[in-house]
Image (cartoon, rainbow, N blue to C red; front, side, top):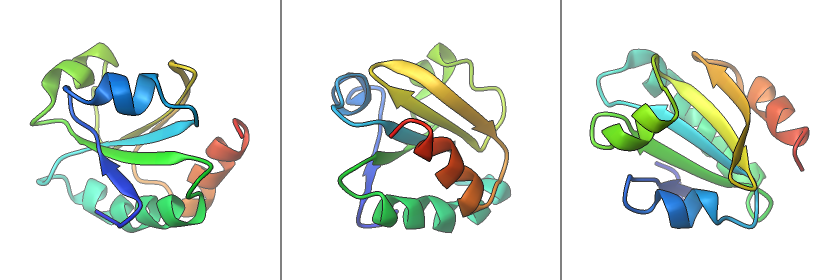
Length: 108
């Protein structure tokens, strides 16, 4: 996880995501998932580039099943953009940094 990436868990989800004053990009991932590992550098780069404008977090689906179930995460990696407590964008699968930036820019 990068320096500007936050670990999101079932227990801190409300504080870190729902009550966030900025949009939040959440990467739903798992250690055993090769596409998740391939996506990680792009997510960390977005965290650095959007620091102060977007909170970027990673949620391990194996360790945080209730949040994954709440958002009906069926495949990983899945990226959600949540703003004002509402899901604004969903991206499923490994995508490039430009696709993530495009999704975020719509909500800034």
